[in-house]
Image (cartoon, rainbow, N blue to C red):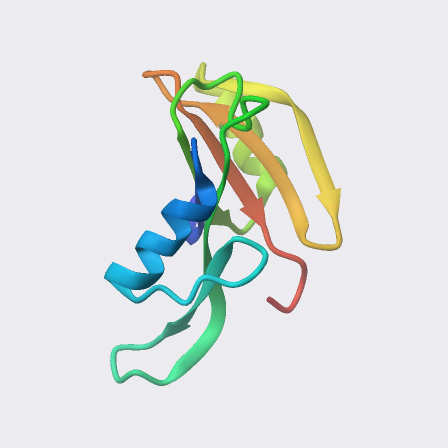
Length: 128
């Protein structure tokens, strides 16, 4: 079974998300959109576009968006079969969170790494 097939997104919280987004826009040239992030389209080694994007987003720190983890970031990993991977992780003794989400954006599940970081696993909808 394939496990992680790519990075679906990188999300982090900030005390002042508007100012931090502006810093990244100005100094690193990230095209931050009104929704608070950017979508990086995948390309092959020759630079030709491929199906898939990686989301980069800065949100507010209020409400502990990555609980039960305590880090100010969360990485979203793209997977082929979320249910099978979550079961494999449980069987291996990993701390898999009970909650999952199934929406128009795909299926989501979460696992805690050994240092207490919340890791998001994402199975995109068919065709993405």
